[in-house]
Length: 343
Ligand SMILES: NC(=O)C1=CN([C@@H]2O[C@H](COP(=O)(O)OP(=O)(O)OC[C@H]3O[C@@H](n4cnc5c(N)ncnc54)[C@H](OP(=O)(O)O)[C@@H]3O)[C@@H](O)[C@H]2O)C=CC1
Ligand SMILES: O=C(CO)COP(=O)(O)O
Image (cartoon, rainbow, N blue to C red; front, side):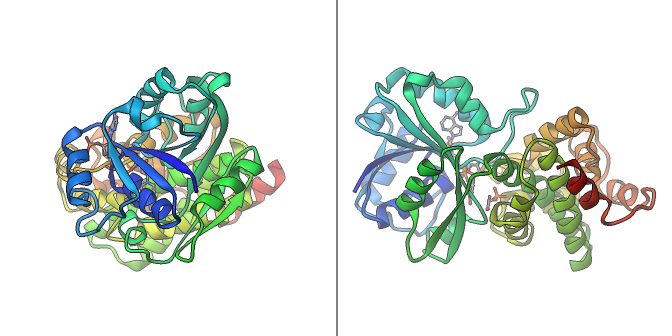
């Protein structure tokens, strides 16, 4: 049994701590708010993020960073994308030996346009870095914490490291696959949030299941188009971290991205929506990053571009949908033909 530190005591960090604790590991769950950590240790609950869920005894909350990282060889990074750099800068001040970093965040950094594994490479000096693994897939924290059946993918450039993380997490309710395509896994996980926001918008506007199916399918086409240009394997986008995560995020009321989109579609403004959500809505910043990536790689991403106009340029959701539908007619499979020809 291992000692593992989970950095980030929000919904996903706490849910993953439960999976590890169920597997018998000793889990140190670090959070930056001492009052939340006190609540975790004294009540065995994290009511804000996972209401009603009892935490196993082998999860111990820490607000002291140095203490939480003492003698640990595996660190799970479970903070929002925008906090990753800041947290890494703090981690490298206190760790003494090489660590395997497992990141579970679904985003791309705007402006630098880096994936999270690239941010880790940039921030962590090689003498402190053993491996980087990403754990991603269709997995709402609310369901994982109730031990509902879930499947995810562990990905790394080093397949031994991906398999090691697979072994740490896998159990009867939480099945972990491996995939060496870290680019495809990270891009699929990050970009599905854009499509989930858009799906929330069309639901909020009162469109039906046909619109949802269209968004999932055409969303997947633009994710795969960009992701394969960036070096991802096109097949990864038909896997758990591609279509799998798109389906769960676009169709579930658990999704914060879908819920935020739904409120936008109903006429609320972005600041108001984000303030009321109280949890991270990764798709907003990722829309900006993907919009920039589409320009950099000269890839057509009409849904992303339409959402960018709504989020950052004040276009109304209805106008954005209308302009998507009024685009020049095209061949459905053009994208796939291009992907296959470009490989
Ligand atoms: N929730 C889910 O079902 C899943 C989430 N993910 C991904 O996991 C990542 C984390 O999301 P999730 O746990 O859901 O988000 P939440 O909003 O539920 O929790 C985020 C946590 O990170 C903390 N945090 C925010 N900024 C900082 C910072 N600068 N330093 C330290 N801690 C910080 C928050 O603290 P505070 O309480 O102060 O805000 C909070 O505890 C996201 O990238 C998300 O896409 C992936 C799969 C499933
Ligand atoms: O990534 C997730 C499910 O796989 C969670 O999605 P949200 O961040 O939209 O809640």
